[in-house]
Length: 521
Ligand SMILES: *[C@@H]1O[C@H](CO)[C@@H](O)[C@H](O)[C@H]1NC(C)=O
Ligand SMILES: *[C@@H]1O[C@H](CO)[C@@H](O)[C@H](O)[C@H]1NC(C)=O
Image 1 (cartoon, rainbow, N blue to C red):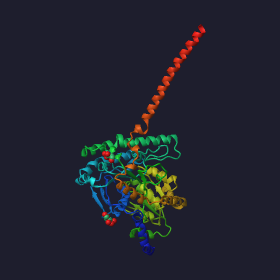
Image 2 (cartoon, rainbow, N blue to C red):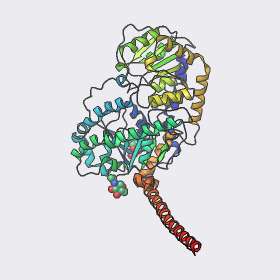
Image 3 (cartoon, rainbow, N blue to C red):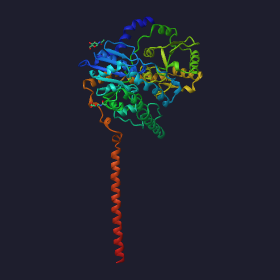
Image 4 (cartoon, protein in one colour):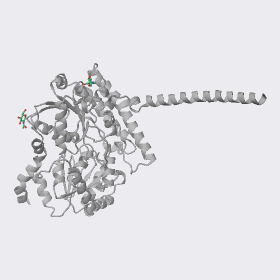
């Protein structure tokens, strides 16, 4: 086996680099070297994974990229300059305290985002970069949780990466209001076709979450903090309306096709790359499991961290894994006592390389979008244990499309988990479905990363590409829904009705008088 890996190493490495190589080979060289400023104050590890391939591809094409963020990116490139503003880590409560509770998750975000504003903008490094932002050609940011970075975009061509893919709020800002009769909100999905109650619930959730974020909850608090540093700037939500382009982390809307504007370009999953050989310790440990052993990879991602898992679940997983004959790779951030020797634990693991390894046959995940996409990309069936945010929705998608199964934390028992694992590992339909999904995902005229590079350079070439922008983005809600027109039409109908009624009644009374007169005459 090791010999085989050594023999094929050059091929594997070439395949691993292919993602970036292909972009350079297929697109004509850029007309000049542009400067991109990437301002992402609130970006965590998982969102970085989406920025990384694009920034590297741009840098490989000779562009200069400067990033400003609060977490080191863990890669270096001669054409990428990283400015890191370390913020003291907030004591974030366990995500398990807000299991399946979108409102609770929002409170966690508030505790993190609102104080982040002053932590970020009180840094001289940030202000220095802010003052030189006009030297750049394009500003980029994340369209999720990063309104704090919008001051960098004032009067600049401005691209967002929508790491969550198609999202009704994000789309509406660009002038594309998706129909809640069939496009789900960010948290829940419903069986199709949506029933009357589902559509009511969907509309309510979209309006309520949007209202909380933009109107009465989060944004007013963030705006107040930002205005301390930038009293002269237009409001953040005003700046947001000027987005030139949004790159969406989705493909075919991720599960359903949706109408998109020319300024909304689907580039998901551009973070998906061919796997590289596993680290030596892990690889040789996997070899010890024998052939056809069915290795399980278990990770709750970087947001729903393993260490925040309540003790009862921790013990449940230890017990479950000890009853399996399969080997388990477990991403966990600290040591675990009493673990059986078929389990390999490490705090950081190369997820895509593991998923790409032919020995790995199942991914037990929290169902985050990026993890789910990577599993589809590498054709590995899933068991989803959603914790919060869009994870329940992704879990439903996994079940609906037969890519694996999903479990609720509250119903978890050792017996249920063992049975579910055995079902997904032994029933070939999950593998078949996810491999078919993977083939469909890859079948497109252009690599998603290439598409992303093309449109990013397009915005730089055309100084914001104003022609891409939908006029709908400039309309108020009254204008967009034509409420004023509806009011005018109603008024006109009312006037016509009143005039007719007046005419008819006077005609009638005249007829009546005439009739009465002729009778009495
Ligand atoms: C960095 O950019 C320059 C042009 O600005 C280019 O010649 C060089 O190849 C790039 N470096 C890498 C490692 O791609
Ligand atoms: C939006 O873009 C227009 C046209 O480029 C510009 O005049 C305006 O100042 C911009 N507004 C904001 C808030 O950046």
